[in-house]
Length: 318
Ligand code: Q9C
Ligand code: ZN
Figure 1 (cartoon, rainbow, N blue to C red):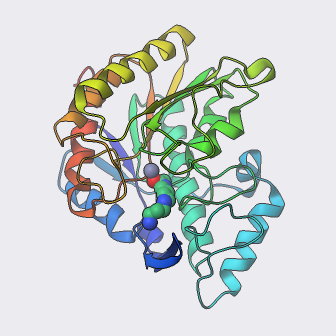
Figure 2: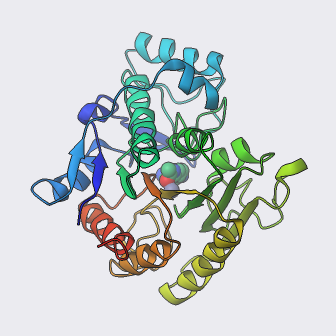
């Protein structure tokens, strides 16, 4: 099978050490080893690893406010020690580090470049983004996210036709939801842990369905702690049905692997094998697809989980 993976090692410049959680400092889980363990699996395989072209600032400003981008740039380049909270952050888990602007800009570039490849005719591309993006809104960072990579890709696709975003990260993609909440040219479908008990707590409920002309184009499927493969696949099929009805021309998959049973901060019960099934179900939409890496923190198994979902996604295309 032929599949392009967009990746740059520059993400390593962002190495957060700690986050502030429930009143204490804990070791940060969003570490460079995540992406390194994934890319390792693909070295020497038939998959082709390509380096991204750097995104232009004007492309970045389509999705994010200029003042927000400028703040991150200045703050990261001027800090010597990471700091956990600022006027543009909505939690204490997303530090400004010296490398966070560089890494985030490259991560956004990885997503944008992947979408350009799909626009020029590739059927399936994997953008190995790090840091992740789906919690970032136009002007707020949080949940380990700075720039919303999936939204940047979706905005690029939307110049060429209707887009659906399927978000299968364990956490609700509050940033992506917010960015497209009033739009009907980008459908957002998210399957995630019930926000009553899990991050981001304040969004991801079924009642959030969009506003204005965006009403009906935002669909949340919150699932209980401990959700197993059969329940998960059932709910996934419901989400896929909605995407099919929408008849998009492009699909962005916000792919988090924190739904995996061994994930240290997740809470679902999905085995390694389940990811091939998830990929296969999504592949049945038969749409030009960009997979954007989001969360997933079981560092040692991320490569194999990723390989399985991509295998599943490649089913129809061989
Ligand atoms: N110490 C993504 O998966 N929760 N973000 C912190 C753990 C924040 C997850 C509690 C989870 C953010 C992209
Ligand atoms: Zn997540």
